[in-house]
Length: 248
Image 1: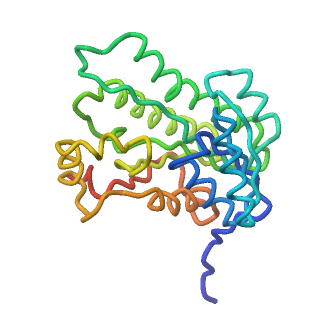
Image 2 (image 1 turned 120 degrees about the vertical axis):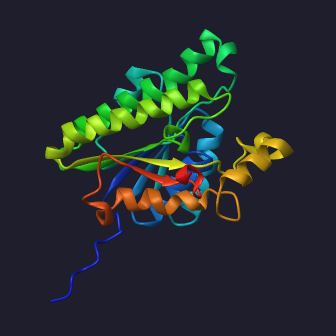
């Protein structure tokens, strides 16, 4: 008898995507919904949430919106009071500066969103996953290397990788898988100023070994893979979508 390819379908699954109204978060939400999941798009901007949900439902996808500040721990707890099968945390913040010039307020703000919020989102999601589930943190290639002017950002993403491994060990017996997706620079509205800087653009193109920069669509398959049964034995690891950046 031939082996059967595991399904990438997510019919009957409920997913929460934070930072889900734009960029990688929206791409993740669309990928999950196209595979059959009901997706809750969580973000801070009510207008952006409404626009994204409308676009998805107009396309025949199952989606609803939730206004959420991921740094509000009480709100996070409330948001996950209804259990989910899949959590994709795409909420994040970057404030770049030379390490000698880092301001304490910037350090605290980036740590609050990228580490503390990520930790407790995963914790609350896991508490409700009685029949197993998949937790996916959108991390970064900078979780595996260093970068000029990125000491704080790199520190937060390295922290996410560490807690992901520990959570995967603790929650594996409950069939809860915890992984990260680590993209390179992705062309979004947020990264537009970086790509418009000729020096930075040249650096990005030099470090990416493939002959183009990344688009949101390049992340969608990775998220779907980690959310589905196709990755049923994948936990405690990172899926690098970096065009070969970290291969050196």
